Amino acid sequence: MADQRAKLTWTEDQIPVSDRFDDPYYSLQNGLEETRHVFLAGNDLPARFTPGFHIAELGFGTGLNLLTVWSEWEKSGQTGPLRFTSFEAFPMAAEDMRHALAAFPELHPWSNRFLTHWTGCECKLETLQFEVIIGDARATLPNWAAAADAWFLDGFSPAKNPELWGADLMQEVAIHTVTGGTAATYTAAGFVRRGLEDAGFNVTRTPGYGRKRHMTRAHKA
Image 1 (cartoon, rainbow, N blue to C red):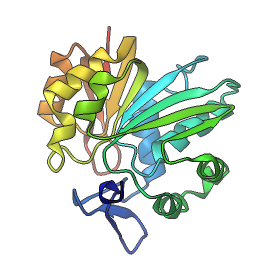
Image 2: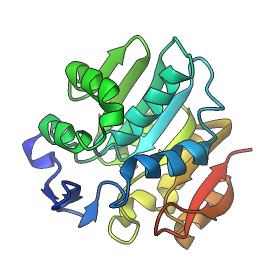
Image 3: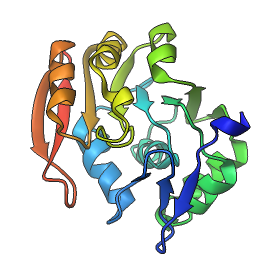
């Protein structure tokens, strides 16, 4: 496992940057607001929350997306568990996750609980059933037996990590999405949008967060 750990460098503002992909793990402007804009609003959450709701994600990173949506799940009054599955090739060490998440004090009630119960592959709590599937998503996702209500497509930049945005993988995302399910991502790269469209999603380009002019939302009819 050691050689599969995320290798990262910290900016002066203590934002983690992947050494492998030369890309920050979240927005240099405000990672929490980026998550809310792209992944929550992009999937019409929390309005769509229902008991048993299942979110899947390409690229777990620091866990910021998970903790943001879990906090909203609890605030919305849901008492059963949010189901959340991430696919991650290079998991971040727990101490690095703690360091990164310290930048978001608003989420500390959730990040502290998560890290206390985090085993490195799962976290099971009364209101959260989380699993990370470690490995190349191109190999692991086809073997996944479930289907998500919503997808967070959050790999590193398509220009720097194209393997996580290819047409074959977008097809697998569609296969593992329920009818009426959605996907959202911060990128509006043409080949990503075409891949989602070819996989059967209705794709819309919408305003992005911060310096990103556009992002992508997708709906599986």
